[in-house]
Length: 163
Image (cartoon, helix red, strand yellow):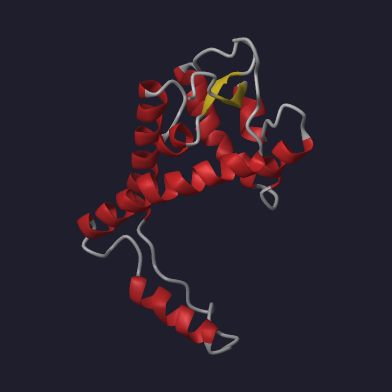
């Protein structure tokens, strides 16, 4: 690699948004229908939204019931498909591939290991606490690495093979 260019916060955010619509949302729809609507109580969620929109201060008094089993299936499905794409496309999910960025080992700039991939995925939880600070670290660091990148020893860079 001649010239390493780290991918910043906004390009990574857009890639994540694309991945939400391309991967997570379709998986969620399939699992919701597979659960026969038992994954979460959509009717209660809709009622809460209507109450909130009308200014009712008790809109969140009753939370929708959720199924831990179906939620776990959803989370594991998203993790599995993400790991599949990281391996298939050398550290890129569809969103990252579309934007010509990829995840690499932070030291060698080579492919990430399975261990790094799993640690990085689990590290997303750390990055959300507190107040998504782990994600915003990319704004503060010269190498644009987030908390989950630091924990896993990864970095997100522009793919030099981009056109």
